Image 1 (tube, rainbow, N blue to C red):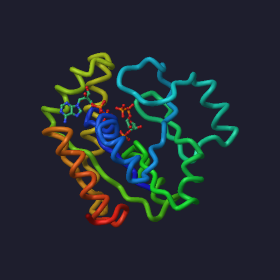
Image 2: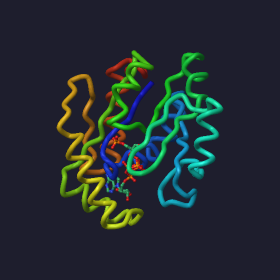
Image 3: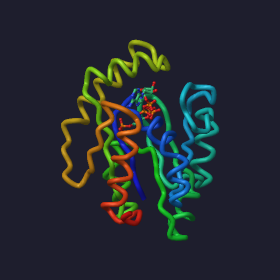
Image 4: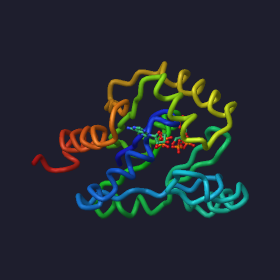
Length: 183
Ligand SMILES: Nc1ncnc2c1ncn2[C@@H]1O[C@H](COP(=O)(O)OP(=O)(O)O)[C@@H](O)[C@H]1O
Ligand SMILES: O=P(O)(O)OC[C@H]1O[C@H](OP(=O)(O)OP(=O)(O)O)[C@H](O)[C@@H]1O
């Protein structure tokens, strides 16, 4: 279980997209999140549902993990447990606030924290144009709050420069941690 976390706007979705083909070629599965956000929301390879649909799925046991953040519900489909049972590596676009709980559920979890310099983060959230100015400020405030929780078991991955550099760094972590073979 590779749990990719980081502030909203740090580039988790972009990184996953940029690495998608190489991850697939390496046999790493990518979980498709279920989010109570409209399906047409920009830049989101996720399944958009209404809060009512989300609750129905949750009660049905459709999620291996789920959390609430930024006024939204996020669910990770139960399918990830089938992949793990088959011995496959699974990459999840996760949550910093949910990390401790995720680690309890998946003791071998590999946590990777995507970081960008604060001024870059603000620029990217504004440029992404998905949230209102107020929502951007709320996300920056949440990031500052969660930043105060250092965890030495988390691998830091800088995405302040190019996505290519961040993809290389991600594969470096996966090789160092034995998820992928050393080349
Ligand atoms: N290395 C990068 N260089 C330039 N822009 C980036 C980079 N990584 C992400 N972005 C842009 O920053 C914004 C936020 O990225 P996104 O992947 O949506 O972040 P997250 O999924 O962590 O919220 C997007 O508009 C994306 O295109
Ligand atoms: O506890 P946190 O680390 O703050 O994370 C809370 C949620 O916020 C992020 O999603 P967001 O709605 O921002 O989607 P995004 O990944 O597309 O930005 C992240 O992917 C988590 O699902």
